[in-house]
Each structure stands twice: as structure tokens, then as C-alpha cells.
Image (cartoon, rainbow, N blue to C red):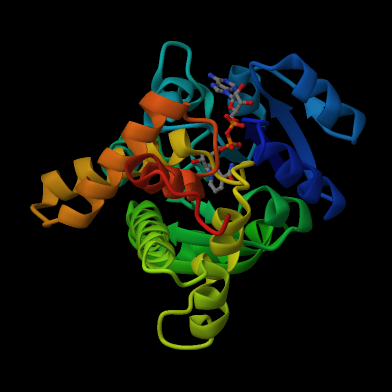
Length: 293
Ligand code: NAD
């Protein structure tokens, strides 16, 4: 099976390396020719997007957002126009599920099946090959290509029809953002009431309030460490998609709207390149305290 991968950024590059390690015949492309050269040196072939469409049985993308995936696949001289009937497209980017469905509908006119398969785990898990894939699409297409995703991830779950992968990712991103805000708010209260947030963290992390988010982000807030991990601007992108999707389906999302305003405030005052746990700095600006310090 010939696989093409378009998008060799923070995530796409290590994912490409894991596909090569698993022995797949891989052809890659990106606007960034340094990234293409790095993956070619690791054993991949290189080609234009159109050539990838013409020659590959499976096309993968790992691009920033819906407009990028739409442009690469359906834009002028896009990949879709070159794909053979019977070939398959799997988009691993985190995009709006409404866009996933639109792209799948266009591809089905050409006899091309699609899965949406966004991931969680970030760069460290992309490197280790232990990402979690949330997948949408037909069961038989999922069964056929699950092993390709397993070369890059340790959990691969089919969540429903096309769009269900990205809907699940939006749910994930809502829970992470609101959890970060809750931890930041609670630590601020504790410190202003005279209790050390380090001790609060130690005392509650094993109870009901404990979470993977608090374990990962609590110590960063306490140390004042805002090195990304996952950048504020990417989380703004995901919550914009969540709000857009919610407005389309009529779901109430007041918590998402509020934490999005805080992320946007951070983007305007601190830039969008800090880790999303820097939501804590919004509370520090408001109160004049420094959490844990
Ligand atoms: P990135 O910005 O590092 O990489 C995107 C790549 O796409 C870049 O190399 C860019 O040059 C390339 N690209 C853009 N347009 C292109 C085009 N027309 N043709 C070819 N290449 C093109 O982004 P990333 O961090 O790798 O994230 C990719 C996706 O994965 C995003 O949707 C993101 O939300 C999601 N994601 C990221 C993380 C993370 O921690 N970084 C975690 C989970 C999910």
C-alpha cells in the first residue's frame, strides 16, 4: 500500500517517522521544504500534492485547520481531483466536523472514502507513537486502515460516522480548557485566602477534583512555566470550531464561550504562543498575585 502524508509540522513530522519505522511506503509533502528534506532523509519519497493524489492508495493530512484541509483537498488542482476511485483519505487534523462532512461528501462523488481521525496527546506522544485517535467514518474503512493509525497511536476508537472524530476532539478540547480555567481559579482563591496552592494540589489530586489536566498543568502554573506544550492560539482555533459547531447544532456552550474569551484576552495581551495553562496568568493580571510564588 502506498501512503501519502501532507503536513509535516510539530505533529506530522514525528507521525511520518513512525509510519516509516513501521515499514510503510511513504510519500510526503509540506510547504516547508526543510521539513520535507528531514523526512526524506528518514526514508520517505517526496512529491507534489497532485502526485500524491495520483499515486497513493491512502492519503493522510496533518494540517492546521478546516480551510487548509479544504484548500489542499478541494482547492484548485487539489489532491481530490487526482485521487483514484477506491482510494481513501484520512484527515488527522483537528478541524470543524461540519467541514469534515463537507469534504467527505465531495470525495464520495469521486468514489473516495474518508475518515476524520484527529488526535490527542501532543508532540511527546506523536514522537512515542502513543497518540489517541478519535475516528469518524464507515466501520469497514476503519477496519481496513486501523493498523496504519496504530503505527502512530496506542488508542484508536471509532466514534461514529464521518465528523464524529472531530466532534469527539471538540468535546476533549472543551473539557481540557474548562478544567484548566477551574484549576487556575481555584489556585488563585487558595493563595488569596492564605493557603499554598502547592499544598492544595497535593491534598486534592487523588480525590474527585483530581484530573490528568490538573496533574499536567497544575505544576506548570505553580512554577510559572508557560513553555508550550499546546499553544493558546491552537486552543482558540479548536474552541472557535466548538462554538461554530455548537451554534450549528443548537447546543448550549456558555462555559466554552467564557473560557474562549479568556484565551482571546491572553492572545491580545501576552500573544498566543504560550502554553494554554497560561490561562492562570489572566487571574494573575486580575489580582496582582503570582500563583505559588
Ligand atoms: P503545525 O502548524 O506545526 O503544522 C502544520 C503543517 O502544515 C506546517 O508544516 C505547514 O507548513 C503545513 N501546511 C499548511 N498548509 C499546507 C499546504 N497547503 N500544503 C502542504 N503543507 C501545508 O501544526 P501541528 O501542531 O502539527 O498541528 C497539526 C494539527 O494537529 C492541528 O489541527 C492541531 O490542532 C492538531 N493537534 C496538535 C497538537 C499539538 O500539540 N501540536 C496536539 C493534538 C492535535
